[in-house]
Length: 472
Image (cartoon, rainbow, N blue to C red):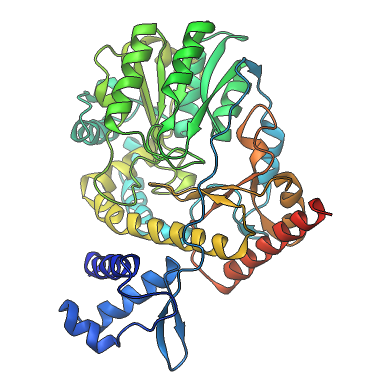
């Protein structure tokens, strides 16, 4: 049923784009559309709800559904040009502040954390209860990871074109620990690491913890990381590693094509620079098949693959993994000396969930939910924010990268939003410089309630006010 109503919604959306139904016009009645598409009335109603969430329809009491296309052609954010030199990283203070208050006190547009309604919590609870009954199996140390967990991961990675054995995998406390372990194995304090710009704050925090300098490579909102910019940096600087999010990068949401992934892997391999791949959003494409990781194109063991289930199962599991490639000995040593092992009970529980097929069933519906939630938020921002706002069109995940009109400070919007009970992520968190001062990142993974709707409108009012003050 979920697939069917989304198919009807997609077909109606295409008809709207083609001008069959124009802005302000009323759609045919539910019974007419039911006969036209050969589906039930309930399916048509679900399709209407989906198009409302995407911003294409509005329901008018006792009148039906009307096409609403206001500002659907909002421009994309521009591609920034970071300073082409390595800089020390300082990213912790604002990130800690952002996460210290969130779901229960403020409207959660800040941290990229899904609302519990988007997660398979009941299934994870059941798997955890089962795992807890396995006795010593879930209470002992397990370095470098529980065999049952690593076996399930090896099967999943193989299905993505990454041929690995369970013994090639190390369990970690989330993807961020995997990235930190890789950085510690490859670098020493003061070394230079290439990263995307804008970059996920967790990557910046990882660099700061290890004491590294970052050289930022610009990200195009459609094509992803600039391979030309990366090549130039490789020629100019002694880069020790490169950290990239090839699939649905945070915050831009772009997914590299297979061709560009191949070019990225080959370029770094020829330069002798390891690629640390963060694939935490790879399971959440909005359309089509799950994209392959860059690791699938690795022929030399030069790609260190990092991922976790924090964005798809439950953040509190803190369960991730790393495929170290040819750096297995160095990274396993770092893991052992860092905290010995990752908790066994979550590994056994997640392995059970994976083995029984529950995760794949969950993903089939979750991908549509995240797509609808992101499009709904994008449409709301387009309606509420002033002209001159750029909004990303993510290909997966659940965050939006918003470029505010020139002169509007994302940091000031952040402060004013806080005062109104709304949390957002200001753009300065995503760089080692103030390059993104007029940007925001918004978390879309929230059920659309009156509270969320009012908060989006209020956020738009704040941006309008900031713009008016700038233009005085």
